[in-house]
Length: 219
Length: 270
Image (cartoon, rainbow over all chains, first blue to last red; front, side, top):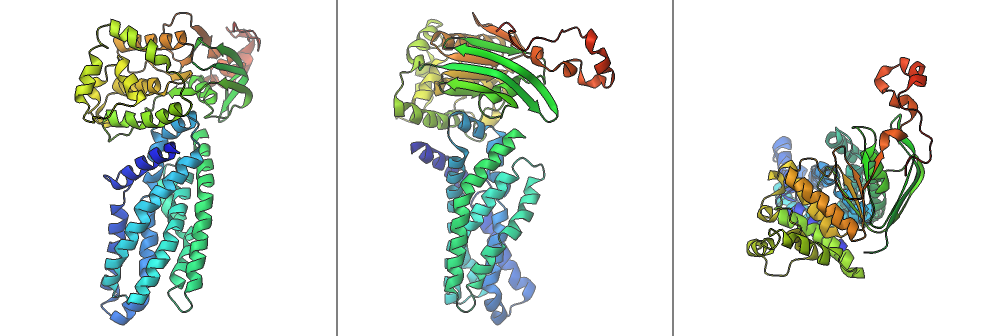
């Protein structure tokens, strides 16, 4: 149990302090920047922005999820951390599960906070903002899980960073459909489906990620 | 030290299309050390990684009792952290494991006396205590680190990324000491170490074996530990590849004139 706590402490220190793993700050700034670009591109039409704004926030969140991928697992594998964990009998699954929790903590809540200024920039209504926030709460664990699986799968590839971005987008489409779909009429079921997908992905991630890391070691 | 044993039975290793070695067997009991020798690329590191359970063997099996410690070319230390804190992470991980079954520390009695006798180890704990900003008692691993005479005391505040190759290797050895594993797997432990530290490393391995541990060392450099056996991994290479893979089609024709007769799969001195 305290091994888990030690691992979590290290992961959180790396993700928040100094941004060693792409950090919590960079994706959030990127997220706000994307949300800021749309009014410039589409024009200052409050009706149009308020209608499209929820979807824009979701697209921005999805794009922000790509940023930290190449730093999530690759440095640990290169520096031999996973080998040392394995030698000590600490399962890859446990390390990945802890990493998922730390990754979401450094990604989900900051993004939900950043959705407030983004919503102001896009002129979202209060009830739309509430749905977006609930949707992000339900959807960001899924985005974090997909990101971690992809990071594990591409960890030994040379062009992994670029590939990871391309892989994440199609895999995140279901989350986007249900999460952003909750913004239109009859929204509650969309939120529930987003949460269901997230839970499923979070349950798979430690095992998929652990297997991928072991496979990368053989290479 | 806990009862430990390391037995390798009829092991074969394939990397890509090449079989590096086959029919490799040895058996190490508590207190024994074995050096695997051979030129680069003959599978020394692969053998160690198979024994560590990090690579799947192509054939054969590994039997292992006792906890495992590995030192290879990657120190597994956080690059941006000061060395002391980077080592403290592993001390916490290892400390948890040892507190849980509270095995008696082999180094507590073993390592302290010799380094104190050298006059260097006795000064080290005081200096380290003064440099350490945290008032709370040091974890087990760090105490072992200060005792081991690897000369890391002045480096504890230096970020790992500024350390030289040899200093990183010393740090990795300190991490290994803190781990208090029964079976040591050392991959080229002398790489980057100066002559004095290399002797220190040999002494650490000798102490470890005297305390009932096992050491498996892959090194192409001479490694001097009393009573250590040697295993030439090239004797286990398949005959075709021993001719040199660069020779192409003539290799097969030259096979009968091979300077190394095909060794029998069993009974290679071990």
